[in-house]
Picture 1 (cartoon, helix red, strand yellow):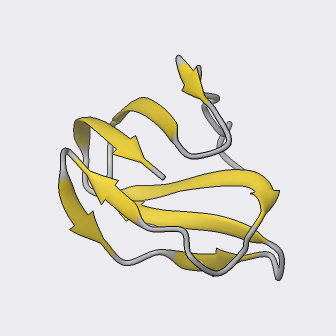
Picture 2 (cartoon, rainbow, N blue to C red):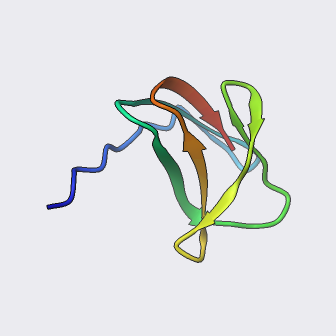
Length: 72
């Protein structure tokens, strides 16, 4: 059985930035379901984080357990 996937609210979504506050019970991924494109960067709590391609077309970043702010 698959675990339920939590959804996050996006308080800031603009052409230049997407900010996603998340709280995870265990390490996981924050996946942004818009098309990946060169030039984007990711930050977790203000620190640079590796930006990964997910499901061939989307952006994702690994996040540790706890409460964080992910910025694309």
